[in-house]
Image 1 (spheres, rainbow over the protein chains, first blue to last red):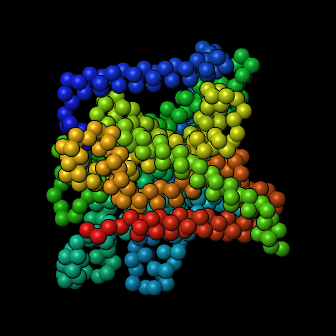
Image 2 (image 1 turned 60 degrees about the vertical axis):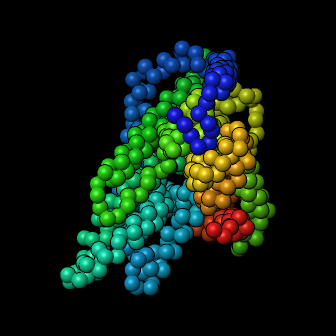
Image 3 (image 1 turned 120 degrees about the vertical axis):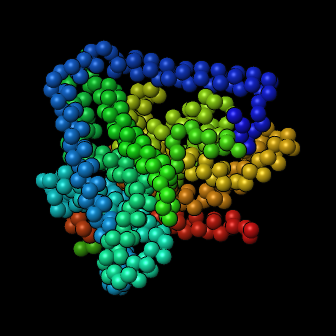
Length: 287
Length: 215
């Protein structure tokens, strides 16, 4: 394996790399072990702490938390895609007021931190319905982002497609619905799914407006059990965190898979790249 | 009754809090991000693996979870009683470093292959090639994505407010607890964020123009 950035290692460089590897790995392992013993010394990793996951109530609550998170994610995902499509079309509209309104909506909700949007919807309008406050906040923000993604996709559809559609007598809405949007969605699918990963991650903001999603449930569980005169925060955070990261990684992997599939198919338009690669890829090492 | 003028001190404190939180975590994220990007293209396989694991893990972790880890676990490992500001900076900086790393790495990929080849044929080592030849040229392409990463960081810093770091979201929360009209407060807070994000994108556009070269 070679890279443009360094020569193919010879015997001396190989020996040096090996030494560096060993020192690096040893240092990292040392750091992890040190952190482990620091946490261990507070008694947070004691076997009794892990036993709370054997209580039926605890595992049920965690499952409920996962379901609540997924519920908010699915609702927000679907609604934000619908809103995004509507806004994208509105922003490309021939009518100035429509275009202007859509632009203002998109720019406003992209500029304001999502947490503040959610908080205001919760405090101002839906005090008793934290789930809908969360879903609406996510929908507004992600809808604005998805609208920009879809708009870029619609603009990337080759002009010939639109001209051909008009030439065979289609109306404006027909051209948009049957020609432009399907191709745009197809081209932008990897980016759309990447944005859905962001939506999934952001459902955790429900924690702050006391929606009982996974993180909130975890925090509540940890505060409800006292074991060895301490709260089991560390083990709960470890378990809940692993569940979150696993869910996000599955979705991120889906985005990459769709991108790979799209590259195989032969159509006129380019498929957008998913978020930049997360594997140790060999982009530099192929030359 | 004017919400802004009546509570100007609170607003100012929150505004400056957001700016300083963003700036400090931006510095941490930039340093970490560039170092990890260097790891990801280095000739030592474990470093490459470490960089990849760092990015994958941090990009797939919700920021709120990182804040929980910073506030509950980090004080246990380092020392108890760390300031909330420092913990907030750690969470934001680590999270953003993964995105900075990816931007820098794709910047490295855009530098013409001949540059690195020429550096190597002059006998430069990996460290020299990267720091003297490739990274300075990569800067130019990295400026644009870095601008949107910094704007995202500014917005993410609102989450720190929920963990009792002084900044603009905290102002919003305090004032709505005091019974002010939530929409009016929202308007002013949104305006404050707009001022910060516009300043950032303006600065980066300036930087981009300075770094531009005629090709």
